[in-house]
Length: 296
Image (cartoon, rainbow, N blue to C red; front, side, top):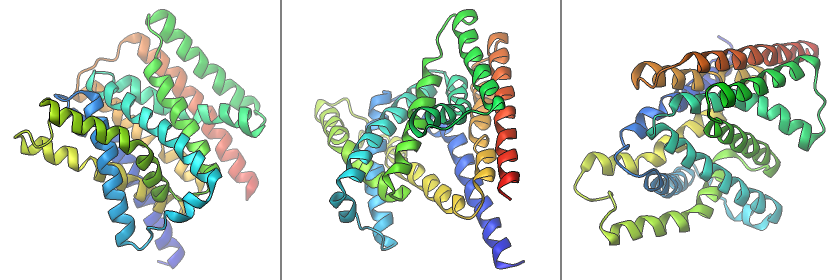
């Protein structure tokens, strides 16, 4: 096997690890479902900062001072920090309130949201197939709202917050892990205040006598950071087209977990809505293949 082939193989492995980890993450948060979502979020932020700083220090890449000197990048990361924090919070709430299926819908919609953001912020033009894909996605949301009787706000917020997060993250020009360090640093004063307040109040769950809960809360930093590292390592070794297709691994695992493991159900209304989304993604995926062939 040539070095290029070895590099690609590693890239696929890293990327698959990242998306499978993100897909399985609901299992992790379910183990903490006896805690309020806000408390889980606070610990995820706090321990993510601690772990990512240690990780970067060990790898000799803890050079955060450079980011602080670039006001534009710093401001962008403050905004992305708020976006990712709110995304994590809504996601944890969705998982532990029995809405894993709807959360998976949000991450299926994300690629289509990226198309919308490209039109708004990057003046990109839509192809006919992309327009059809967006119309199908809009039809899916409208159908859920009218027939299912409820606007899928969890899915829509997860999709738009993550899509906007990705767009701004690219504009920051900062690598994923140093960026995560700044983003969690921005949120840590709020998270630490909440954790300390809960401990003083006597209602906090950290070091309250449950070793499993303590371990899970502390390791929240690991399960947040490692998939990001794997994704960064994988994305630079394989094509964006390959990454684009592999991103469906995560929401697919989430959907299967919601239906078969956590018995959330999958009524006809959701089946129809998801069918619209999958058809939209088929059109979207075709445009990716078409563009990659032209590029060659």
